Length: 257
Image 1 (cartoon, rainbow, N blue to C red):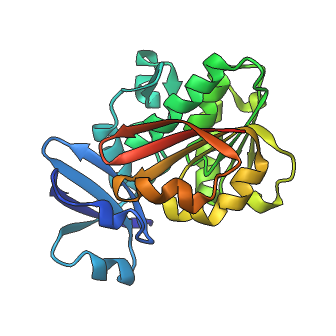
Image 2: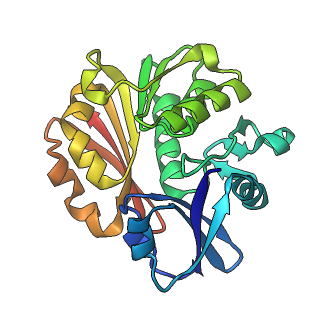
């Protein structure tokens, strides 16, 4: 049976230190606390000393998500779980850390993608890098049914969850899922979107730029990194169109010069 660590911390607890910890799966806000999830491994347990930790199983996880996952606004969409499908227009079956629309970085990326698609009628293709639950690709497909969309991720569990969500939203025929690494993709896209932590964005920088023929959307950059992020990404061929912020997170919209 699959098991994970669950940690409960106060809402004002500094959780930024966990975002780049290998084994961190995600977090949910509830009342006056934050509920954090981690892979069950010794190296992670060592990092969590002093916290209120419990071990949860697959069944516990599902029930927790049902309790915490309520409808949430994300751009022009209301994201809902399958058991509340009638209350929204984008359905996501939650899985471990793959993206449900509740996190600030997802909302920022979705808003920037929506801005592009509503203002640029010539956009015909988009790639969602690190798609997770597929939420950004699904939102893009619902906004522009005529687009070619590819959603990629190196996590097989994420791909499985994304496919389930494509089916729930009836967009399977409009989105191509792939676990092929980014560097192996050759043909450029009008829009390249990546909602990933900054350390991964730096690692993927060359390929993200190479594959964008027009627009770049980045999200997942903390305030502490936002001033130097663009310089480190070496984006001389792109113009910064907009920088957006939600809580301690930042997103960027750029256009090729």
